[in-house]
Amino acid sequence: MPLYVLIVTSFKAGSDIGVASQWNLPENWTTASWAKAWTSLQPSFVRTFQLAIPVAVISSVIGAANGFVLSRWRFPGADVVFTLILFGMFIPYQAVMIPLREIVTTIGIPPGIPTLVFVHCVYGIPICTLIFRNYYATTVPEELVEAAWVDGAGLLRTFARIILPISAPAFVVTVIWQFTSAWNDYLFAIFLSSTRNGPITIALNALAGAQSPDYAASMAGALITSLPTLLVYVLLGRWFIGGLMAGSVKG
Image 1 (tube, one colour):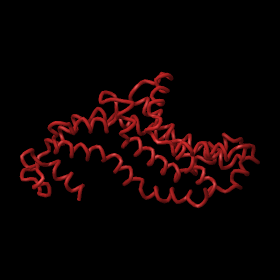
Image 2: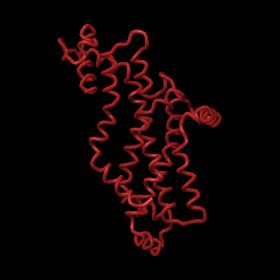
Image 3: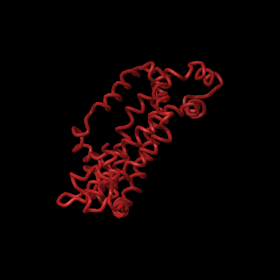
Image 4: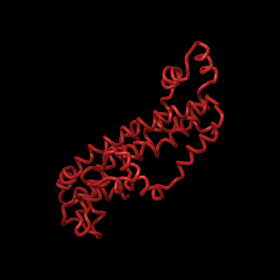
């Protein structure tokens, strides 16, 4: 029902919008609010793809490498390393925001999208590592890895030639997770970027306004903002549950 209100309001003229008429269909259908919203959001829309796609890919690949090593290479202290990596999942964003900003400034990462890519990749590594470690521990036969080592393949070659090609279900889970997390993020975005160089959530907040909000444009902007994540789930959703359950038997 909230989605219904979003849609019908986005096609209304200003005179048709009100609390009493929020459930009514528009008397005069118009796409002016959609045009206004798209004009305002288009630059940040492109920037958000520049954020979400690298975050999804980089953190998934690092998580896959971590998961393979932690599930198949039982080096001394492996469980401790895995526990420390998982500890990062439970650190609230608010607790590290100020030191995090100091770190990226000291390192010299450019503000805006590059900073957000770095931050989301770092925060995405624990959950990606957990998903891939469980996936490899429960679905990849030990004999497959041992056969590759007997044939002379080292750790990296086994990972690149044997493990990655059969990791698609886990990649679907982590890519969807990281893409939507980066796309929908507002806290990191408002703290580490601005409307000039930030993602679409910042631009959507600016579009909403403060003193005299344009409700129709805000509703249209909210729908535009949600479309990419909706499409990701529609296109990859049937593999998402399967990939998630594939690594759910053993922790």
